[in-house]
Length: 404
Image 1: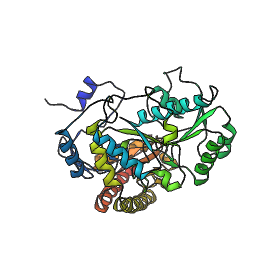
Image 2: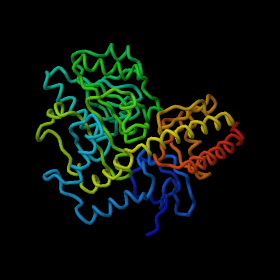
Image 3: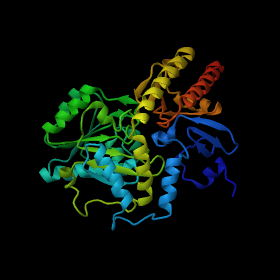
Image 4: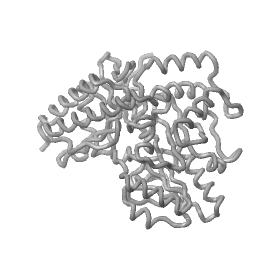
């Protein structure tokens, strides 16, 4: 059966607008499309393919488990899920793990946990504090907690009891806190909101406020976790421990899996029957995720993240200086954002499209920020080639005559 980009328009719900090319094969941080054209992948499947494409570690784990057991449901537990949970708890603050299939599901579980936890103190304690420009998923509850109105418009009425305050504004957060708050939810690095890292003072202040008001501090590390920050999880970079942490994306390296991490005491809130997932903890997904987790939780990966992040920062600054398209670089580890300059505001997608024509794949974080989230094991040569292609794309774009 032959399919093309036009096939998407004929058979798929139009909630996406995918690129015109269709990749069919990948290896490390390179992709090839239907026509055999090669691309340097600096997008990483939106911070998912942490070990690149067709990594032998993942292929072997998948193949071995595929010959044993694929699915059981939560009526029975399984060895891969238990091994992965043990590995996660040994490497983090967490003592208990809930597995699901995505970041949105992990956050949904965390927000339900927060409400249940608050209710155990008193029926009044149900308010969730989040931040403008946050992103926590696409379910009705998670888009409501996320602080971007464009994702809730047309889906009203949205769940109540959710307040938003400016990110990195500790005074505003303190003013919003009271005895009704059951949780503060934040991304250590706002991803979809433009690659904005939290300040150290803000993270520490949020921790203190949550403790003072007997509220849970929830870190959404769906995008910032699993080695991307240069630490296993970004909370370790800040040295501030949350009560609950959500993770997905890079956890499976491309296999759908998510997890909510918490302490034994808080986990008691979600007693038998209070929450569940048919596919959560699937042995096939957990076997692959365990192999990924062991591979990324190493000094070698952390060192490469640091080195390649420096290389990307320096390269983007140079491109911005040459062509006037970027103003500075921000982010943490291999979650990198290049804000558009004043004359290129709102045109980040044009940079992405120009890059594709030159064989490099990047992302946007809103209309004003070019985003990169490549594999954590991407090589120096692959980053150099990607930057070279992006440089050529920007040079061509800048040289194009402007519309009258």
